[in-house]
Image (cartoon, rainbow, N blue to C red; front, side):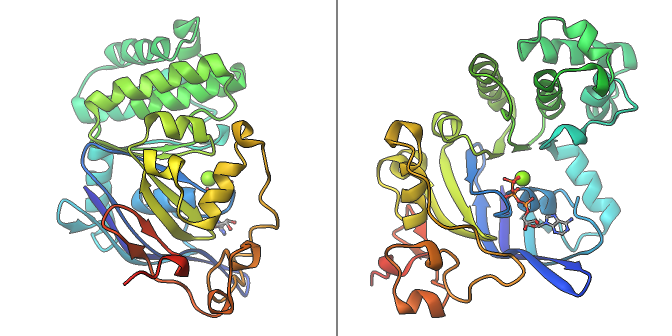
Length: 310
Ligand SMILES: Nc1ncnc2c1ncn2[C@@H]1O[C@H](COP(=O)(O)OP(=O)(O)OP(=O)(O)O)[C@@H](O)[C@H]1O
Ligand SMILES: [Mg+2]
């Protein structure tokens, strides 16, 4: 469906390079929900924003993003945006993603109105319907409110409605349940399941392992701008391959909430070899000096020398 090939993103800051993605290879299959997991700053949002051509001008991008036979990165911006606007949708991360000057319903239905030709009255009705499916008690009021008039939980569900309204071939979801209590989270999960029937594929970024376990077909683990494991969800939770993935599973409350020691390294001067090596209790000298290639057994891909099978 979408293929990321050797994707690199470097942010040019004042005399400093921040390497946000360091050669990502990843495929999103038709009809699947691909969960993306990783600590803060590992490059999850940058990955989604690169596909949507949303990166700021100081981002230097190389590699390819192939969709329907075209490279979205080299395609002329206007043409790329036409494809992206028609086929992709985004549930963005964070409250700042809502325009404070527009009422919620307009932001929810804007894309739908543009691409399906429905009018404002129908747009407003569809926005209300979408909001009520997220469990909001007064969808009419929320639809007609501005950002500053809404609570955090309401804003989060406006964002979910924005991404879920209309039918898109690929949905990009950036922490759709962040800040919601368990009950509201359930409703959003149900909504995602429902939308899945209409939408072809999803890339779902979340720190919420339980959410990813429930809805994802495969899990992709990012660490410091790199993909270090891609596994089927069940296999991932039963027998994670990469030492970092194992640490993430062990940090689950149900597994005793054991935190991962050490800190995620700087993206300005990341470690030369395996980026997890300084925090890895299984690392060897080889891990410090060279980046492991992606090893695969046909089902799981893992970037760790432990799996250098023939
Ligand atoms: N506009 C920007 N300018 C400079 N650096 C940036 C910019 N956007 C992101 N970065 C850097 O790129 C790296 C990856 O950021 P990204 O937002 O993708 O992280 P993330 O995995 O989504 O984290 P979180 O879980 O906190 O949302 C970080 O080091 C971040 O500081
Ligand atoms: Mg993010």
